[in-house]
Image 1 (spheres, rainbow, N blue to C red):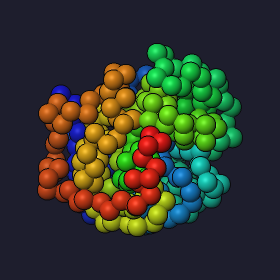
Image 2 (image 1 turned 90 degrees about the vertical axis):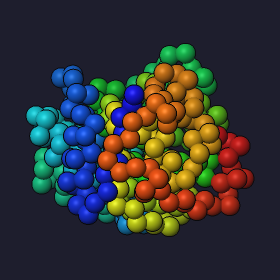
Image 3 (image 1 turned 45 degrees about the horizontal axis):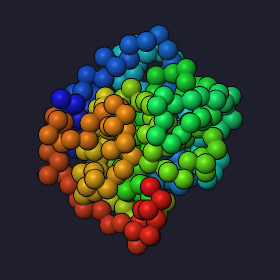
Image 4 (image 1 turned 60 degrees about the horizontal axis):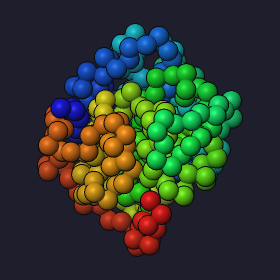
Length: 281
């Protein structure tokens, strides 16, 4: 059984640490490598808009890592539509990094390495930031829906480590699964403090006060989708990722600890363009 924690509360840092403890995330940090904390900064809007990752959740992840004795911590992102460091500043991540002790990296400016995903569904080669390849990755996305893929959570969040991002949008769902087979998150932590409905950049915030975490990225995203009222059958990249052995989307094989899905679920509104663009997935 894959274990996924749902924690509801008022202190994002404490909620994040608690969720990671509940899923025994320390056990996933088994190698002598740096840890890359990978948030979602598709743009530089403030996390209160429901678009970008809350710095308080990132701080909770780092506090947990320090608690586990991890000293080499990188916060890295390759923003899609803005300057990455501007996004860090607007979210307050630069202050977190300075206060707690973490390195900030713009993955768009990293050295890229060409990689060939194993048994590709569509993505035969891809250029990935060296920092991501040489680190244990913790994916920290926002809880929000997406016009093409239904949801954008921990698996899709890995797109920030590759270039060029626009090349992914033909056979997007298969490409995401192939990419995740190369850079699979060791731990996934969904920031559901202020979530986002409508679509990925619409800026329609929904107060949820949740953190969702686990070691199986497909299971974590399945639970995240369910919390937003999105059937996993509509999230093709999770189905493909499961087919590639990256995790499970079967809720009967996922043990949810903490809050129950049905107690925190809210059916998110989805933009009209979602139906028009879903064929691209």
